[in-house]
View 1: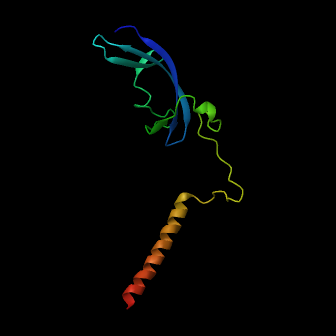
View 2: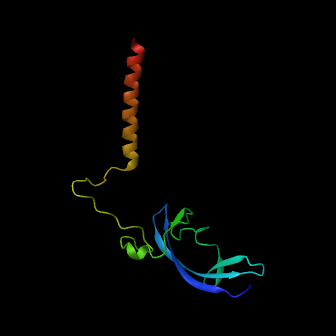
View 3: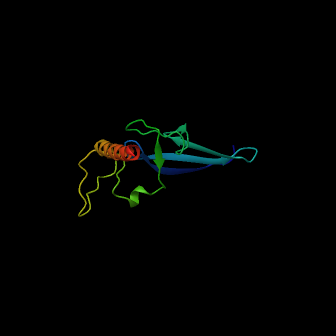
Length: 127
């Protein structure tokens, strides 16, 4: 390899399963090989690792469904703190707080759809 350029990069991540937000620091080594092909090596703690957009897992729940943000994103968004999920938002004025779990709302909706469908079925087949 020829002369290399190294730089530190901090990448913020969010787990789309548990909503944990964290940052990881990488050292990126960029160089060209003898044939002139660009070579990029990503390291953490002096160990070669895959790039941040490939194979990152959540340190909290182990899920592999992770997204990354642009460098510096978390510094401009204090509502998210590295190591924790986003802070809960207070309901807006005039908006009731969520007290009914999503599963209960889904069951109620399903029951109403079944009743409406049964009534429509009876009307069509009574004639």
